[in-house]
Length: 137
Image (tube, rainbow, N blue to C red):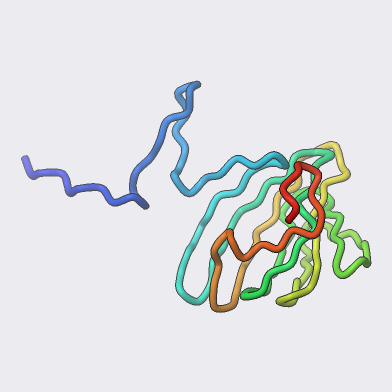
């Protein structure tokens, strides 16, 4: 019998209190959750789920732009103060430095795929302009 290779952080799985397995790339947030699908030097890809009636911070980024592709639900997007809806199969592009917000005004979870592109993708490249959860700077 061969020896099992040592697991790296990206291979490890955690266990929630209810016994469900969860990837270490999964994060709960007050508005829902996200899972990092790819994290490369040139881009980062996340699956984002926004719970009904919740919204992310109104924010901007200094080092990245984003592309939001709606998988399910009705996304309410605010882009530099302009509000519009994005339905499944459609997308919104968020230019670097532009204030933006993602919101779920529906009754079902909103699921999007977010592609970040730029030169830095850390969570500390979020400049919160307003936030429902007291995290604005």
